[in-house]
Amino acid sequence: MRAAVLGSPIGHSLSPALHRAAYQELGLAGWSYEAIECDAARLPGLLAGCGPDWAGLSLTMPLKRAVLPLLDRTEPLAAEVGAANTVVFSGGRRHGYNTDVPGMLAALAEAGLGPARAGGPAPEAVRADTGGPGTVLILGGGATACSALAAVRHLGALEATVAVRDPARAADLLTVASRLPMRVRLAEFDEPGICDPGLLISTVPADTASRHAERLSRRALRPRLVLDVVYHPWPTALAAAAREAGVVVVGGFALLLHQAVGQFTLMTGKPAPLEAMRAAGLAALAAAAAHGGG
Image 1 (spheres, one colour):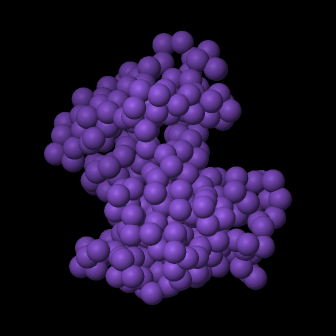
Image 2 (cartoon, rainbow, N blue to C red):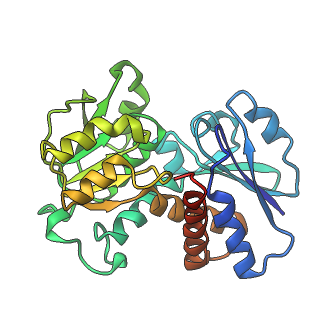
């Protein structure tokens, strides 16, 4: 069976390392996973060319929204957040799923924010009186930011501040917020008017968040927990500044790993070998760094 990750650019994706490690760990001979460069214009043709030998696809930028009208069935979560990062082929039909939201929840849970499955209750530093994440600040307004909204809503947040460069392009995010439902305050990207969020989630490229790294360094921004969805190169300036300030940091690799775990199970029907996938991903990141890629 075949599977692949699609996106543009896609050359540095860790998804092949994660999925191939899982195939090897479980002895799934005959399964393959590749990375395919694909933009929104090429997506319909590529989907049409996936025959019965295809199990599924992982989707990254800029395809998570573009794929929705091309699906035969969309799970409620993917429809709610307006983004699908997974396509599963079954019975000649295309089924769309979102594993970013549960992946984000699992990544936060490993850091102590969320259900007891992460190893106990959340530390007081990142827990509101309600058991939720406290005040939430999200950087960026794209598809990943929409998934972040759904994740923090699941954790009990009723509102969030979302810092965007162009409020006119935040229509999709506001629509998602109304479906959840959540109250969203759009704010200026560089100066969002919030200094001490309980949870800061950055969904933007590393260089785009540099202004907030500076604010962290001079303690003008004082979050209790930071999730930066970037995983390569690592650490980002934001993550490094947060660690220097004593802030709990969750990196993008944890999100990538846990969303891949969900994808693997959807495509194969088997429980994913989490630790084998984690080890393979970390080894691939270390190899990239050793060769000057991070």
